[in-house]
Structure formats: structure tokens, C-alpha cells
Length: 87
Image 1: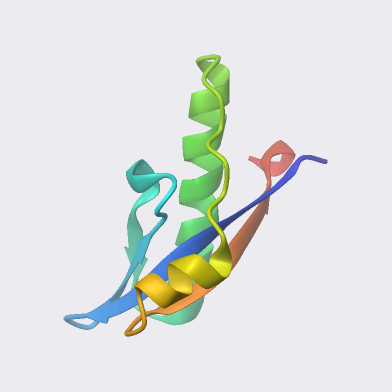
Image 2 (image 1 turned 30 degrees about the vertical axis):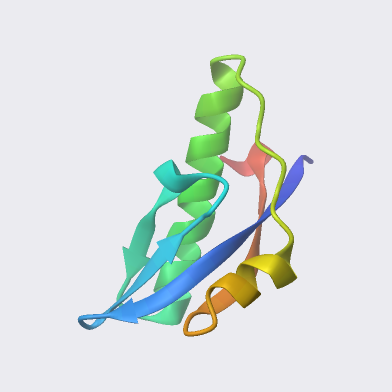
């Protein structure tokens, strides 16, 4: 089991919830509900990290949750954790 955790920014916009990872901008995704956005965020995080690791790139160090939340006070900021072995 290889668990990884990164902060994600969830921002409602035009009937969607946009999800952005400050440390992995290429993992950007969205969903119609918070539950869907969180599921897609987990998938996007896993795919992005597996791609990086598969190309022998290092995974970035995760930002501090409190710092990300302070920088985005209008959004919901959560930690997203995935088991890379499941993807």
C-alpha cells in the first residue's frame, strides 16, 4: 500500500465544483457534486502521480494544508489521499 496525500482546492463555479492541486496543476478536474469532485480528484491525483513515477520523475512535496487554505479563503480546501497501488 502506497498512500499519498495532497491538499486540493474545491471551488464552486457555474454548477460545477472545480478541483485544483497546487502541487500538481496537471491533476485539475471537476465534478457536479462535492462527492463526485472528490472521487474525480482521487482518480486525477493517482493518475498524475503514477504517470510521474512511471517516467522516473519525483513526486512533489505536498504543500501545508493550512497555508493552502489561507491562500484560498473563498474555497473549500481538503486533503485528498489515495493508495497508488489501487490505480
